[in-house]
Length: 177
Image 1 (cartoon, helix red, strand yellow):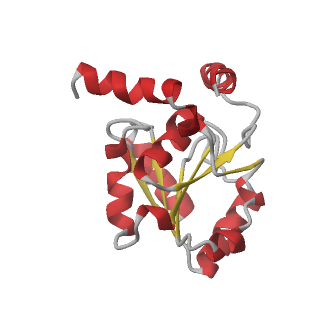
Image 2: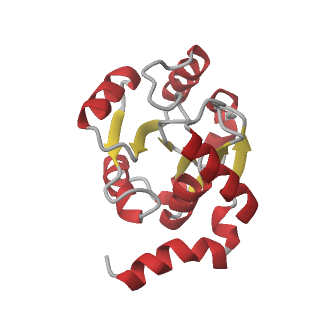
């Protein structure tokens, strides 16, 4: 990626703040109204992992989120996750925990190529039939907007024990947007 492309990618939300604005906001994945999404034509969900489905660096999924994932499956949603983790071991563990495909974002979110494996997996669905669900405006919401998906922000975040660098980033995201 050229320097110009990098600058365009990372400066766009500052110039176009609507790219940071989610279509919907919930305090938890467990609170998402799946029936509303289905009635809007959404047929697939791409989840962020850390801070969205479970606490950062955890391997424990809260029961209410497990229940919501089961409900989404029963309604017919196709699901997968995209994470910025670089650990193949963690991705393999997460796939076993969630019983869904977890893709490593390469390059990292918000780059559109980070969503390519998930979009390929969800094919033939079109991006407008997909919701990206995450806790970060910069990576999840902006990335979802770039691919043309419906976006759902989990805010102020499912977990208050985010690492200090993530809390700092979320603070800046809140100020800028």
